[in-house]
Length: 124
Image 1 (cartoon, helix red, strand yellow):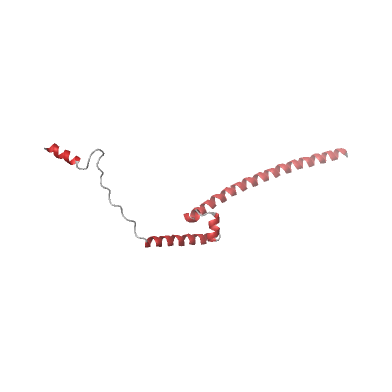
Image 2: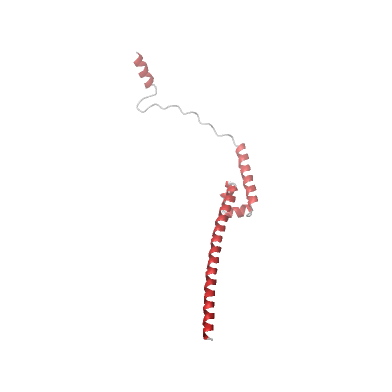
């Protein structure tokens, strides 16, 4: 009777060890899958962010929520309106004034006519 209990206890012990090994394998598989899915999600999120206009991407989360209510479509429309307003304001402004071309400066230690006088004195 005693031997029967010892054999049953050994069998239970063996079963528990196998169960623990299987459990640890499943947990390791789930962690690996979770990490792969997390990296995939992160990559896809970056790709979606790159599709947004730069003005939307450069907003802080607070600006995004305050100005656009956290709605991506509304943010794109908001940026488009802002861009359109700034471009129409730029159209109303006069063009920038052109700077006149710079004239050559005389070299240090002489005046502008010195080179011409030297050239004429060589010919003589």
